[in-house]
Length: 190
View 1 (cartoon, rainbow, N blue to C red):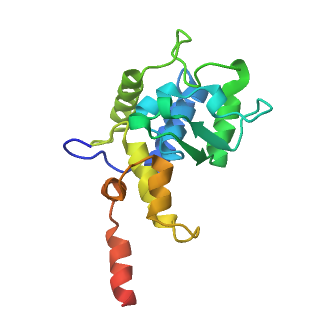
View 2 (cartoon, helix red, strand yellow):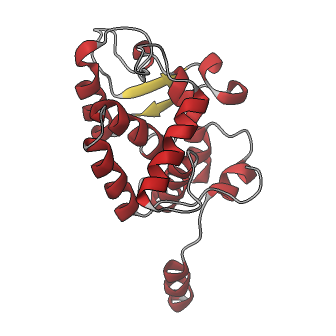
């Protein structure tokens, strides 16, 4: 992350983004783009490289895992990501017309580029009046939320690190946004 890190989205911000996507020209695609970042922690370049084979099972149906191969991930950080049910539903809705090739297609039917996804998010957050947000905001939101829930699931920050494909735990920790209310509750527990 260069410069100022992208802001983490609150639950209301995500709902507003999804509502705006529902009213867009390509609602199923746009909802999937948002959810791939917020519910799977994918980078813009990974969203653009995602193919149907990476999200389908051996029977060709949308599966329960995203199999992100090394060549589709940044710095060779291929990984398996369990699919959130809301994301799975969005991909099923999007798949009506597609059986192979890129999951996220441009209006001309080719894969959207990473740059076009970055620009798409910039326009979305501008329309919502969210300053400091970028295509990386969904990923930071995913990292922050999974880090906060890791112990409830019997996991740790190492599990979050593996989900997002960071080589260093220090990088993962840099993505996690602090919560002042949680800090106050922690101190009161002492």
